[in-house]
Length: 445
Ligand SMILES: Cc1ncc(COP(=O)(O)O)c(C=O)c1O
Image 1: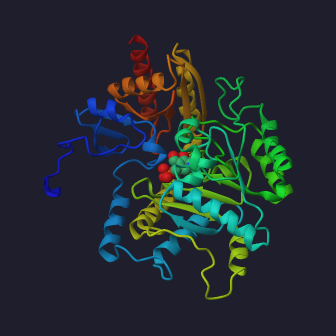
Image 2: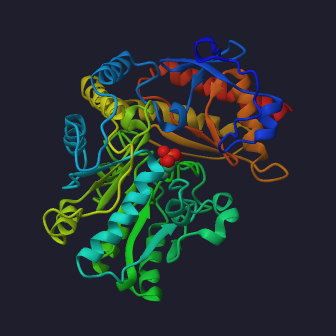
Image 3: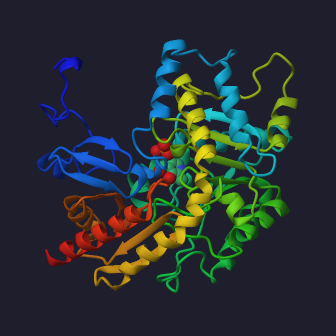
C-alpha cells in the first residue's frame, strides 16, 4: 500500500518483529493504537483509553501538543538535517543551555544521544575516558545494581539487572561489571514514598570496592528510583551513602534519570529531589515529550575539562557520537518542551498532584490479587500476586485493563503507572477507577 493510502489497520502483521512483545499472542489478538490527544488514546476498535503511563514515561505534557508539532514543522522547513561532526547548528547549543539551567550542581556539559540506551553507553564511555585523561586508565569496572534497567545496548544490558534481559546475552556482556543488591526488601510492603529501612544496602559499593580494588572502579550507575522494575524508591539516606562511598574512592556516580528526569518526582531531576548530586545524569524520553527520539548526558564541568585538557587543540577529544546527536527536529521538540515546562510550571504541578495520585493508587490495596504497591511523585508500581509462572498475572491484568480502557505498561508482574503531568483530579480518578475494574475483571477470569 502506498504511504498516501496508508490506514491505521495494516494488511499484514507478520513482517514486523515487535520489541519486548509476545509476538505470537499479539498477532492472534492485536492491540493497535490509532489516535492520541491529551490524556487519551484510541484503539483500532474505536475505543477510548486513558493513558496511565505517559506511554513509556515519555509524554508527560500530553499527546498531540500543538506547540511541539509546530516547532518540529518549522524546523523541518528551515533545516531538516545537518551532520553533527566538526560542525553544528544553533539549536542544539541553545537546548544544551536550557537543559543545563535545570541540572543540579555544575552538570553543565550536555552530550546529545538518540535515546536512553545511547545515553547510558555515552555515560559509561565518558567515565572511562575521564579516568584515562586523569592518568587512571586502570579504572575499568562499572558497578550496577540488581533489578536495574539501563536500556538494551551491551553496556546498559551488562550494568542492568533484570534477569530476562540478560539471560540470552550472557556470553557477550561487557566485562568488569559488578552488581550491588537491589533495595526491594520484604518489609517494604505498601510503603508510600521512601522506605525507612535499607540504607545499609548502599554499603555493597564499599564491599565491592574492597573486594575488587577501588582503584579499578570507574563508575557506579543507578536509577535514583528504579522505574522499569516497578518504582523501587530508594531507602532514606541510601543515595547519599552511595555518594559518600564514591567520593571516598574516586568513583564517578551516574544517575540514570531517563525516567525520573524532567519532573517525574516533582523536581527537575531526582538528584535535586533527594539532595544528592551525581557526576553525570542520563536523560531521554520526556526531553522531547517522547515525540522524537533524543537522549542526553549531563556531565560535571570537571569531567568535560579533564577530557578537553588531555588532548591538544585540533584533536577530537572524545571519539564518540551519533549520526542523530542533536538532530534538528529532536532539538526543536526539546526547546518547545522547555517552553511548556516553564509556562505551565509543571514540576510544581507534579508536587501538588502527587499526594492525590498516590492516595488513589494505594486505595487499590484491598484488591485480593494485588501483592504490593509502591509510589513516589507521579510514578507507581502495582505488583500482582504470582500466578502459575512469573509474568502471567501482569500480562493478563494488562489485557483486562486494556479492555476496560486504561492503557499502561506491565513489566513482569508489575503494572507501571505514571500519569501525565497535565492530568487533573478527574483523570486520576478515571485511571484508578478503571484499574479497579480491570484488576477485578482479571480476578474473575
Ligand atoms: C532508566 C532507563 N535507562 C535507559 C532506558 C533506555 O532508554 P531507550 O529505550 O530510550 O533506549 C530506559 C528505558 O525505559 C530506562 O528506563
